[in-house]
Image (cartoon, rainbow, N blue to C red; front, side, top):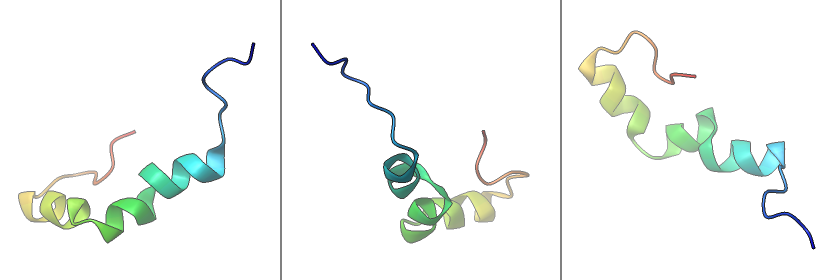
Length: 41
């Protein structure tokens, strides 16, 4: 039986990466709040 998590970096980046965040106003809201880092790793 296959395990459930089949990692795929491209798919992950598309969903949660910088550009995905840029599209939905998450980055702007964090900028206006004055965050030091916009995306915390």
